[in-house]
Image (cartoon, rainbow over all chains, first blue to last red; front, top):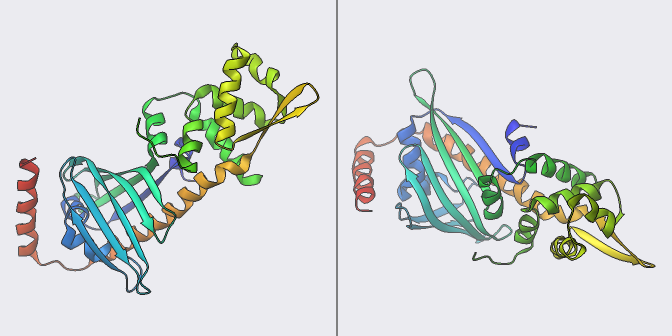
Length: 154
Length: 127
């Protein structure tokens, strides 16, 4: 199991290193014309986004599958620190199970010998778990880890 | 706090309290009575019952009356929506990252890029 999961199992963390400088990766997330080109990874899926990249600004990303299925993600930008950090709320409905009141944090770290690469760490949490984490409660992580294992074996 | 009541929220909310988490841990060892559950917490029975009700509402615990005794049991399956949510979005973000990787490998028109970069900086300032 990746170490990140052991820290707080009721949130998810995805890490990836991209072969592009940090400014470029940050722009791919914050300019609609760029986001539209990659945010729909499935073949034939189209993306239409509007991004008001300001703290308190809203965004809306509409993903449409070739079969007409639509998945809409929307929310508010909470923190913007180009080119290193982006925090936004995430509500979504459509093709997947609807989610409300979740929080996405995307961090961009320089990587490679000359900063020619970028490591991106994305954390997606339910607000409740974000609040819990901020309280730094001791023992809560280990407890949940065990509970989750218990649930999986039940 | 403004919250919409979804099953997932109820689960996370129930887990947000240290006493309730300890109760769940105790219940992982097996079914137990309410008074046994209350003992390590030096709490009044009504206070313990209140925590139990939160856990019950989230579907994490069920209570049965056996004779005069009230027994509690963990319903581990109630954590499944939270686990499913994580599994679903892990797959979603992994796919987005695959797509971003492909996008970044493509050459970019450099003038367009600079223009939109300036625009973006202005909008940051205007904030």
